[in-house]
Image (cartoon, rainbow, N blue to C red):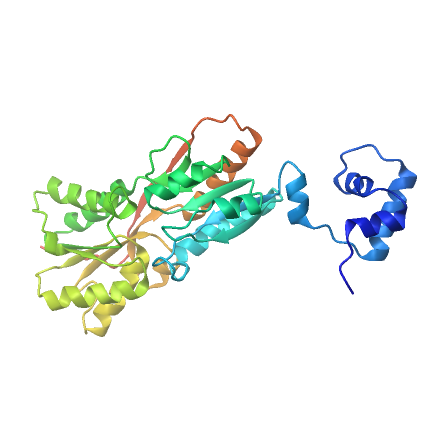
Length: 339
């Protein structure tokens, strides 16, 4: 059976399509008798409103777009890193509490998000991670409220929820140095100008400088923010024969991959190598040994992004807002003290 349309409901109830719409939306005062006829017709026809079409005709669609990074342009989404699953789950949960739904997508560096935003009549957009400058220039053209998560884009159009990435990496490196390590490697994702990895590299360098340890480029290993990259970077480190005793990983998922890489090479943590992560993913406490790391409030990021976005939706004249969430060093068993 073909899906019933609003005109079918109107015909059965003996009213106009506009009247049916008024009953559904509660926008106008309709007599109880007319409302009853319309509701009876809806029940008999098993009519379900088309939310997409409804969104186009109303002020809002109750739909929030969420842009999620990809491992590579045109490749899979970064859900193998549970950081993204956690922040996305938080966005969905808090949006749902306010009767909003989310539409998840990714964009290539050369792809405009404008078409999708207009087609789906998005009420707002949350963008996770960093993208090329042209992406942000294009997004502004939507004139839709937008909140960035983990971005250092300095355009005043965007709201932002982030942490102090340089400080977090500084805390991690400082902890390793306090435990006597002086040959310290740094495992990172792709280091891009003004990106999160660049900031975390800066924090690593700041701590080295504070302790009088020379920065060495060959101690920096760059890959992807995923488990396999942690394994692969560990192999590169071991093959290099560098006298490294500790690794500062720019993400827990990298650190966990590194622990696997050391294990496969017959090395022990922390007896042979100390390692510290960044994020405090839930799995980090279940590792053996437990992963020492810098804790950020991942779920809180999603919550604050939704709250800020809805605040802007309700107040279109809202000026730029920024939330910088706190960090905390979590000590477990993956870093040992050396003389």
